[in-house]
Image (cartoon, rainbow, N blue to C red):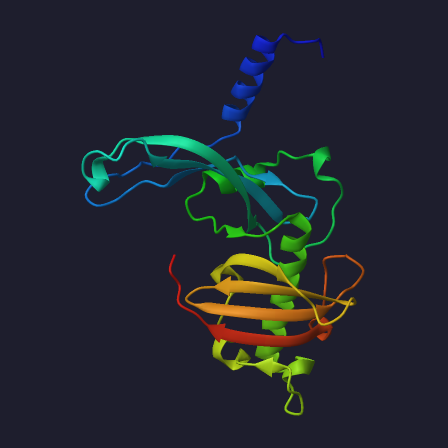
Length: 229
């Protein structure tokens, strides 16, 4: 690649940025609504885990440009951006390592998810956490329905409230967060699921590989929370 002048580099990089962003959805402002941010998702692309697609949502943050006039009709000005990773499944777990994502980032199945209005996206910190956490949740739900989860057997005290969510599905998932495990040999994830479940699962760490089976689950806790989304 040849050296670029400041002006050329600026133009090319800005054009490249716009080229990976999806069109913006309609914006409705006024009538008591104040726009705080606008999400601009990228086109979906494959990760290094087979069946797991990713997109990044760039949020353009706004604030009032003046304090004159009514609250809803004040002009706005952008002041910052932030980005979040979102993921979608194009196959059922387990999600396994399939090689470096840079070998074939663009993949038709993931790109079709971008275009489809029915794709279900959930937030997660990064690719590995998304793959491993989905496998852990799938193992937890499978074991719960079968009644075979070790921490949920009658003589165990490490299962709280799981019976309330046996009907839950992976499609109910909308956010994954990491949490502190019980030891250096465990991993912990919190899942927010529709309609209003907060599920915390601790599982044995299998050396960083994403796949886990139900017998890896150490403890499960389910709570109901107020969903303010």
